[in-house]
Amino acid sequence: MTPSKFNNSRKLAQVHLAGVSQLLCMIVLAFALSACSDQGDDSTFTGQGALQTTTPAPSASDQEIFEARLYPLLVDPLNFCVGCHGVTQDPTFAAADATTAYNALISQQKVNLVNPALSRIYLRPQDDRHNCGGAASCNRVAADFLAAIQEWSNLASSGPPPGDTMRVVSNTSNFALSTEGDAARADENAIALFKFSEGTGNVTMDTSGAGAAITLQIDGMDWVDGGGLRNVSGKAQASATDSRKLYDMIAPVNEYSVEAWVIPDNTAQDGPARIVSYSQDTAVRNFTMGQNAIYYQLRNRSVATGVNGTPALEALDPQTNT
Image (cartoon, rainbow, N blue to C red; front, side, top):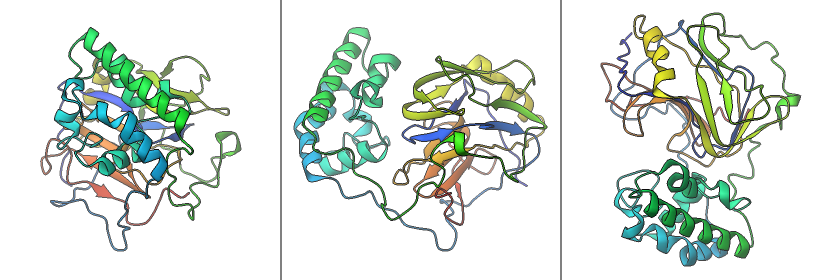
């Protein structure tokens, strides 16, 4: 086994699901000191028979509205997006090619045409103040983005393009109908456990009982009957202080496992779309469990990988249709 190489430099624990639009429930995050992560080679290992996915063909009318309303704002240097998301930073929703930009925005669900105020691309400058040049500038950018998304929503004849309509994404439509069955639990040695049973509010608590409890701040998610969260356009994130116990308890043994109960709602996204992540930002991480189209993917930082936990490991067989 190649030992994990955990770094404690301002790492944040996240049940992020950025653009994942999934339901989370029951024992969703359980770090049990019981299993090691394997390492890959210099590229993502997909295994025999892996599906090479492409972004769904866009709806022409929706893309035309996007190009007329929101796209000019995304590629305007005064709005700060194009410097990173034009070329180098995924998702490339400010790319020079409008179709590329549209596909990136839709496949990773950065806009919410049902409720524009929940659009992640609006919340980033409005709430997160993400690389937008200070409060006044962030407010301007956010207001312009929201107005454009609202116009798009009003004019759109259809919502975002669907994924593969031939695939059953999940036979379980909500967690009230779910059962544990014979699934083996991994909570005996859990150091962080989130059941998402609060049902209301903007925080959810670690109930593992191991060390100081971790509090996740919820943003852009809806509570689900029966226990769980549905990601609309946000994340559930812990502070660096709360996340410290993960480093303190995992690093000495170089072993961990992650368990998540999820119902995928979108099998077109890639990236991977993050489900559970212990990371500093999009370029520096300890580990991430994510979704890449119909496969689950793991990035694990070790002495044999880069600081972003790559190359990644990917499930050999399709997983997200169950």
